[in-house]
Image (cartoon, rainbow, N blue to C red; front, side, top):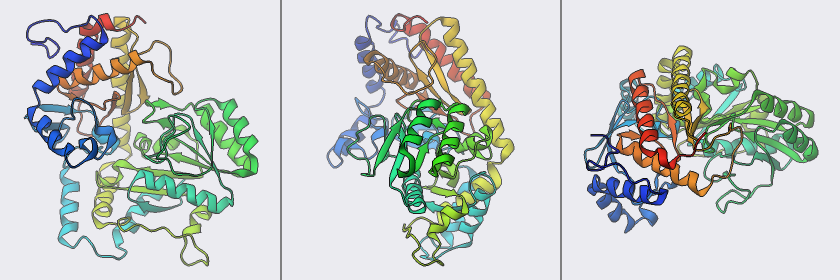
Length: 444
């Protein structure tokens, strides 16, 4: 029986609210243990969790085990994991070589309060891969990496303002879906429009010598997997050179798109790059690097060097896992194969949408992609309608019913264990969604 065939009857499609109510009901019926876990968590944690992106109603699914690209929840339901921990799970769950490296590091002691050889090894690996990274320092997350890169740019230029993109995301305290976010760090900001070369050039030149940095994702991640055009990034590169501002590529997510990140694939080299997510094999990690003269503001051999603290910046588990992940597993050929698999998947998904004639499409690059419920080409962030948001939520719950785990916002990030057969399974599930929910989907 189809997962969208509710107890032998077709799903309720009279309107979106009825369809969502039925999907929620079916979801809850299969997950009583997850409901119990959430209820207990709400007694001691606001909202019942500690990471906003994992929250959804009626309650989040509690996962208890992962292997390769498979997950199992507290109720015994099995899923094909196409979320890949929001790009951090590139190597799948418990990759043996990474697991061995972590276990060996633990056996030697995990809180040594000292420098170690692996941090130098990992630094060499990263400097050798990313065109913009001549020197690098480590942090605990991509968010921290972006904060430290901005601090470096301000110190290097002696300026204060950072230009960001409307719709951009650089961590929980650097979120720009709107120009006001109550948890953002209070730093001087200027805004410009993503993928608008002329507007960006004009705004950067207008900011002039007040502008310390321009921070941009070569592809929006949280903003819907919308790639930047090469023309747009080239305009940023040219204008920042004219004004002396530091161009920072946030490649926390997109560095997976080639051995040298999206910057290498596009042939545009920023002044600085931030990294994170998968690089330490699934362990907590962040890094920021760039031109030598910028990074040397942190050189402790120099008078007045900038401080950069962090108890776990060089923790032995992340350093050991990172050396194996980047030195032994994720080489150039592997990166290219993953990119190609993602491109083929997105092509197949969009083919299904086109054949069905529905207002639905997938954007992205390589192994990252996101569903959207609109007709026209998507080249910039947009304010989704209420109907679009409900369709995205319905898609999420219908994919869970089909045993496929995605982000609630409809994003997928393929991991290395994902096969062509797994991709075909996702395409089939999307085709079934289109067939079952056609009355709710607009025409293309």
